[in-house]
Each structure stands twice: as structure tokens, then as C-alpha cells.
Image (cartoon, rainbow over all chains, first blue to last red; front, side):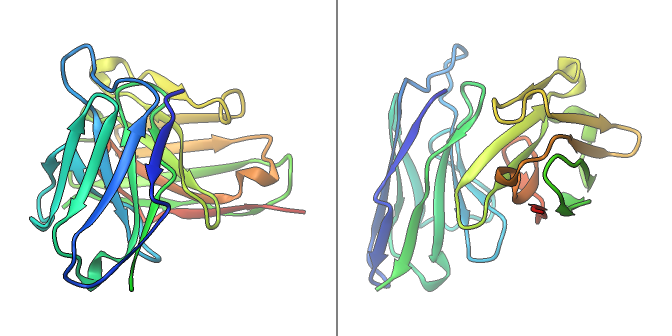
Length: 112
Length: 115
């Protein structure tokens, strides 16, 4: 199985400051069709996960522009340009290139 | 509006069975892959399995933890997805989410396996 490793585990951030989460895969996520299937999800306390980003950098409808995804191959990043109070929660990356699909362990974003 | 509503969770003894359902609306069910993801209390997310769409002959795929014990089925006429869970273990205790492709998630249903 593809192992997804996220860092940091916990990310205390000051309101209005940027935040960055890393996600690394144990093998390249480039699919034979040329796409890279790496998604990012946000799970607010007490809620279901919500997809923020698909295929590395495509923001979902309704997702604020302060969220951005980047990366390639085995190395990916989710950046929040200016953290707001509603961004508190756990963020997960997930690869969809190989079955079984696998998630990273999660990064908890909290306000300092 | 896409909606996914899970039901069927509850308390079951080790070795027991449970059938979860996911009622959907707001999209053409047969066109989409559907799956189940679970989250143990205070833990991360884990895939259980998925059903491919009609174009892919509804092929089902499972993770190692589910293979041989869990079965995913779907009823396109009812726009519903199911998860039959047999031989339940305490480590299967989790919130089970129904998921459409990789985009929409239901609110989940809690399964507790305990004596």
C-alpha cells in the first residue's frame, strides 16, 4: 500500500498568519493517464471531512482562495495564506492513484 | 444538491453482523464510484472499500481489513449503497462514512462493537 506521511502532526498558528502542511507519498502518485491524484480534506471538529483540493491544486467550488495546493511526484503541500478561526480542524491528504486509496495521518490546525 | 445519508449503525457484539445503508440524492447514482470510509474514535481516516460505477461493471474493491468479512452492494433503482459487515471485531468500532467518488461525504453512522 502507498504510505502517506503528513507533517507536522500539530500546527498552532496565529490568526492572519500563513500555514503550510506537508504530505509525502512512498511512491510517485503520477497515474498512467498522466494525472496526479492527490486530494486534500478538511475535517472541522464534529463534522465530516470536506474536500478542499483535488488533483494536487484544483480548489473545490466554495473553497476560499486562501487555500492552495501544490507539489508533484511524491511531495505535496497545502498552504493557507492567512489562517482564519474557521480553519481550525484536522487536514488530511489522500492519494487516489492506487488501490487501496490511502490517507495521511492528519495535521491538526489550531489557533495559538 | 448532493446528499448522502447513512443509517444502520449501532451496538453489536463481537462476531455479530450489521448492515449499513447510504441513501443518496442529487446526482446520477449509477454514474459514480461509491465507497465507505471509517474513522475510529479519535483516529484518522481509513478506506473500507468501494463500488465502481456502471461503466466499470460495478466492480467492488476492499482493503485488507475488510476483505472476506465486509461486502459492498448497491441498488441503482433506490440510489442506495450498502455495507454488509460480518464477523465484527472490537477494532471495527468507528464512524462509517458513505462517500461519492472522492468529493462528497455523508455525516456518518457510528458502529460500536463491544460485549
